[in-house]
Length: 223
Image (cartoon, rainbow, N blue to C red; front, top):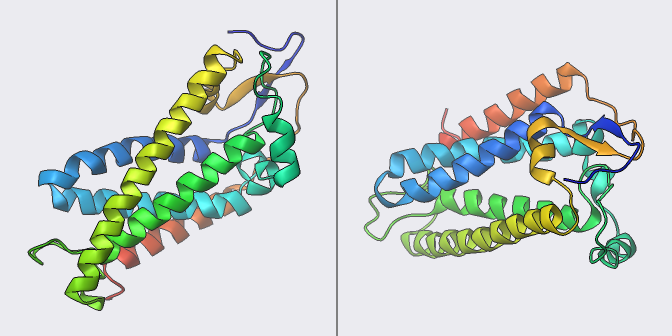
């Protein structure tokens, strides 16, 4: 795998970003498997995904370095300018997500919010299984939401396939190992981007916040 000559080994992804990323990979696959005959596991997996998504949204504002949305979410001009360079066979040197990758991240997070949100209200055809908030809506609406839950998962599958295809494209064509960077948190770049880390208290606050929200939703806000 080619790397920039004379570069430095820079830290991009902190532990929280990497842990959330790989836990989402595992839990999304597990939720898919459990949706057929293990609804209780499916629900608990969904609650865990809620917590992870809430934490990632929080960490995108309160985290440090490449975790912050402000470090990689760009405007239309920046996206178009970067898109014009994608076909070039050179090593990607963007510190963190590139402007196109940022759109993928935002899309996946948005669809995950729809996915877990609809799951909270969805009810099965026999009204035997339902989300913790399914009693707040009528049976017919709960069934409609269940259909939206299924459709949002199809959209999520499409986004995951696109995401994996993009990672493989960067690996094969642009000689950039994005998988390794999400495992180790480091990449070789032409220069150190000087990304800062968030203090530990922000991490602790985010974990507490995400856990509290996931727990409250799992109880249907009944305390």
